[in-house]
Image 1 (cartoon, rainbow, N blue to C red):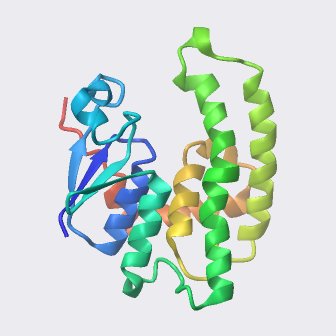
Image 2 (image 1 turned 30 degrees about the vertical axis):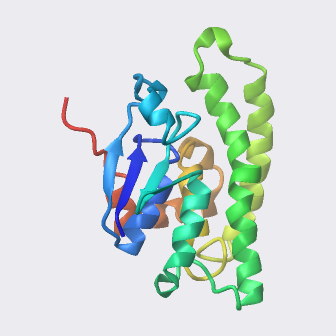
Length: 207
């Protein structure tokens, strides 16, 4: 399998890179300067129509959307056990729930906080969005902390792609985990994984 991952450091592109490292698959990184113009070129827009990351080329077929990429790879290699088999109905139901919980419930709140406090130029920020999103995010964190107080991983006792999606998103705002000890221990545990450490390495050439 020939794999090229279009990648910007400290973005959602970490998710498929982490999955690839867990699966021990060879791949190439094509670095995209997301904020420096690479994403606006006609050439890259043919790969990702919105000029975002990640995108991945698998044997000449391009996929976008980080969660979809991770989901596909996890099912493509069932022997690696990053996802429960579909025949295991209850385990698969729980896994699917958490895979979609991240982009549907957790991520939008975290992204609003970042968008209106860091990402957008100051003149485009809406300051009132930050306390609103923070209140919602803290409520979600409290719920997740209760869940992870009783288990090592979000979908049960086995590490899965649901943990890659959840953990990578929680690490966007690590300071907000200080009052959630189970989540702090959970993200610490995930960061000890060799595959995470390889995936989180900044591939940019030295300045």
